[in-house]
Every structure is written in structure tokens, then in C-alpha cells.
Length: 327
Image (cartoon, rainbow, N blue to C red; front, side, top):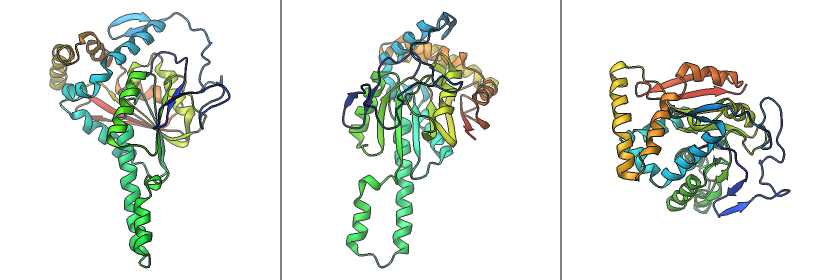
């Protein structure tokens, strides 16, 4: 989950971590930091000591970054279990709906920001692999003269099983990425997947690099949401799509009252019992209430340069999927 500044860049491409040294950068990673209005800001640039919110607490912008980092460092090991407990498993359906709304095709280049535990990345890989396999089957049916060996070779070609699709998972928290890497290894995800430590406000990628940018339950933790949206616009190719899954404002009064009771009286208790961490989950609940409304966030996305911006409420507005295009 991205909030503080990243002073180092680490990359893992399904084999281990390696330090990216000057003059030795990964394909697509930036060698310089542009200063344009939609580019990333240099790490050395001084910031004004302005105040912002950390849940319901008022803190300096510099302080918030460190606090958010500590929250996700603390909850990383129990993150998936707590998501299931807090949402009664519904978060899995919300993430599935995000993929169905994306409808990626073989060859899609995805950047998943604040996606350290891999939930969106793994769904993406499953989706495009299924799409590619259906395409291959249609082609095989149309080619009746292929031998058994040729058919078997097509099915066994793991490197081509994604049709050229690739997902880059970018997260600022090492512990979250560590959990994602462990899950990928345990579930057998290898091809088409890479991991990079990076800041949503200063993405370490070239301009016009990706077809789709996703961020699920992460953007509310960013100190400067406007900068993160600008960076999303910068790294997307012309015609690329921005998709954000985030908690939002409930539009049903009865559901809203029940949701508030559950959020403030149950979730922190679950955090203490299951993860031994009341304060982190209290912050997560408070951060949801501080996030802009659906319409306000829609305007922020448009201000970043996106067009055809829409949103779709899920579960009475408890969460919403926001969509925009770089045209």
C-alpha cells in the first residue's frame, strides 16, 4: 500500500530479490524522473510541512507516510485472514467483479499498484490464461489436419499460456510483497508475473507503459491522492484504462447505520483477537470514512486527465469500482 517515499527500488521476478543499481535497470523502469505536470516528482524535492489525516488523527504529511507503512507492515501476515473475517469473504467477490469489469485480453500489460499480496494479479493471470486457452481451442478445432504431437505441444507451452500477458505488482511495503511472493510460489504462479517495490506517487516506470492500471483498497492510504492519479495517467498507454476498487460511501441509511456499528465496534475487536493489533484496524476503519465520496473521487480522476470516468457501487456503496480512460 503506497504512501511514504521510496528510497530504494527492489525487484523480484519470480526468482528472488535483486537491487537495481544505477546503469542497470529493468525493462520499463525509469532511468530519470520527469518534472512535467503528469510526471513523477524527484525524491530530492522538498515538501511543505502541511497537515493531513491519519484516520481521524491530524498528522504531518511526512508523519503519515511512516504511520501507514507501519500499519501494513504490522498486518501483512494476517492480512488475507482479516479480509475474510471483516468482509465475511465478500471482498473476494468484489475483486472478481473488478476483473470482470476489466475484461483483459491475451497480451494485456497490467500494473497493479498497492497489490502486494497478489489478489488482483493472480485473478488477472487466471483470467487471461482461460481466455487464451479458449482461443487456442477454437483455433485447434479449425485446424483438423494437426497431428497429435502438434496439438500436445500447443497445450504444454507454458510460456505462451498467457498469450503474452504480463502483470507487474508494485507496492511500497516489503512485508506485503513478501507475502505475495510466498503465495505465488505456493500456488504455482511463475510466468507473466513480476514484483517491484515502489511508490504510487512516484512510479518507477516509463511513460505509456501499461494497458491497464489497477489499485484495490490502496489509494485511500496514499498521502497525495492527486499525485497517485497523475502517475497512473502517465504510465498508461494512450487508450489505457484506470480501475480502482475502494471503500466508499454507503447510499442506504439502514445499511449505513449497521455498517458503522460493525466497523467501529466489531472490526477493531477482530483485529485484536486475530492479529493482536487493535490500532491498525481502527485506522483502517477511520481511513474509509475520510476517503472522498464517489462523486468527489470521480472529479479527482477527471482532474488527473482521465476521460469517460464512471463508477459502479457494490453492496449498497460499501465499495465502488471507478473507471477512467487515457484518451
